[in-house]
Each structure stands twice: as C-alpha cells, then as structure tokens.
Length: 78
Ligand SMILES: [Zn+2]
Image 1 (spheres, rainbow, N blue to C red):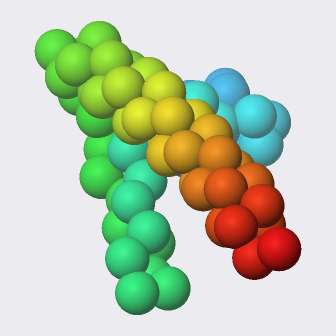
Image 2 (cartoon, rainbow, N blue to C red):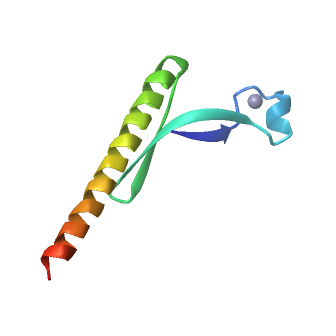
C-alpha cells in the first residue's frame, strides 16, 4: 500500500494551492516490470492493509526457506 499525494477536484482548495495536496492510499502491484495502481476507497482500506500484511509475512517465510535451502545445498556440495 502506498500513499500518494493527489490534487482534488475543488479549484479553491487551500491544500492543493499550497502544493500540499491530499495523501490518498493506493494499492500498488508490480507485474512484468509494470506497476499498477488502484485507489483504495475507505471501505477497502482495512482489507487491503491485511492483504499487504499477509503478503509481507509470506514473503518473509519464503525468504527464510530459500536461505535454509541455500545452506543445505552448500553443505551437500562437499
Ligand atoms: Zn484539494
């Protein structure tokens, strides 16, 4: 999940005029070197946060597994 600063549609918005803009949550996904971004409306934010957390913990497990496999291979080469 990434936070991007975007201008809103109100022409007289002080935040946009000052260049501060609005922080909005997006879900980003990289595929074949391309990054897809979708805006997360309020009711999907919690869901998306959980998915991202699940993904990260899975990623950690896979990384750990790959380290273990690497060590095993290294030992078996001898
Ligand atoms: Zn604005």
